[in-house]
Length: 206
Image 1 (cartoon, rainbow, N blue to C red):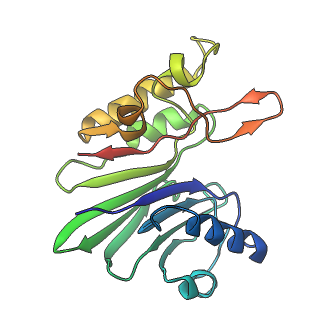
Image 2: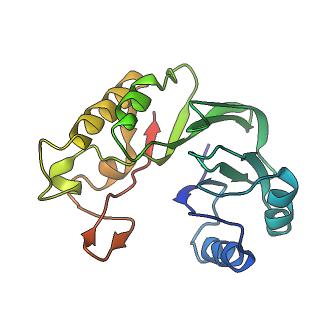
């Protein structure tokens, strides 16, 4: 079973030109993604979601979210079947179960708080290793601070979040696929004016 999966914090997808740019970005990939996990979509209805993406060959699963999580969209190719979905923790955690080639697997989207509450959130997430699972999203923390946040304060509260994320991955027999493929590199998914920010990793359960 081989699938390509992309995860992205979209920071809003209500604007039509932004949705068009996102789809154009997908088409630039060597392999068009089979599954796309989008966080912070700000979409409020299935109708809006389907109208935006169905013409591009994707089916949609939507969790409209809350004032905190702002919602998720999982785009998936028609050769995958969505079996069920559920959300927890004020929609900061969303699980979708799929079937592909007679195999069942789960995709979990996470949008962790960007404050000390994320420690409690990461501790509260329970997945279990019984079904192969991809854990994707915006964790608002990193696993290896020396590589991914060089020069950061080792006593900062986010250090506790790194430990909590490590415990979560260990509990569900997961690995950080980005670190597995690039064991010594230091990379970032976005920047701001005063310097690099957190890289958002894609852990995957094996």
